[in-house]
Image 1 (cartoon, rainbow, N blue to C red):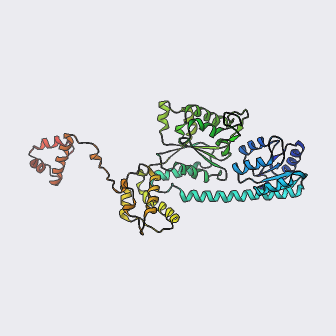
Image 2 (image 1 turned 60 degrees about the horizontal axis):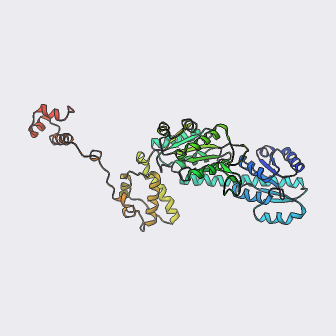
Length: 449
């Protein structure tokens, strides 16, 4: 690895001995690495949450927590980060056991620094390659499952907006009805950006009780409240330098709105029960199925937070407003589920006609579920109406004129226009057929003819 590439790697040293930290920091900094050091496991966990660490070198035995506990933490929270152990002669057996748990390598103190530098170089390269593979898989999976399919004006506008702001640090608000693909748009924004190798952390604000959501976002320290038996890293920290996606942010209560605003303004936070400020570097993407402007007027959403999260706005149109995209979306989902089920099916014109007539209150998500159901139930070579849910196969689109009972005046106008059509537009003849004067004829139509 050349000097330029080394300079891009962040290394964490965990050792309770000041001289060991000092020597290692000097050696690795001289090699071009960005070095961070902690005297204990608790501080190392904080650094892992705040920085995108490429590799960690940790002592095995330390007061207040050992290297094995740190390895368990890394495997759970940062599984792609390699950990190298430094151990005394008396704990070699423990280090060997930790290798089977996922440690990258171990050295007996004092280490051979030439070999340590070589192994660290391999660890960083291993992490880089693994990250690239995982990122590629995520992007391919995202593209395969993307709901941003279609060529209607609304979808093109959304895609163009995502493309134009993908590499900015500004907050993005994605609006749209339930099922329109807001999370897919957020993932497209993340995996198409320079942050694609960083975490994408999604939090459904509507699915987590208000009493638990704060601890999910901020995390907490051991003993912060009854039941807090160990430190918990929150979603803010997990996002690191990546993307934090707050789905249905309109569900946040006022106390959490105020706390989120402070995090966004100050770019730092404290865990619940903690007294240390932790710097934040995530990019915020939010979604809502509500009109937040109206919620601000009603007093349900803070105006200052609304403007803070709505720097860039992306609107996901409902499926009924993009009917031209329905055949493409249906074919996309058909291929996806045919691959999964090992089937080869098509959607004939009559079935596609049924799908086009439906109004899709559940939007793209509902269409996806309907196609999945049809693929699972299909026994022939094509989807039939019998494989569609009854509410779709028996759906009758109501004509706008029949949406409400007609008044006597409306019925009269409808009858006059029908006679006029039968008379090929000849008003005099229509008036004669109706037995009224030409003046009355015009009056009944309100002067429209």
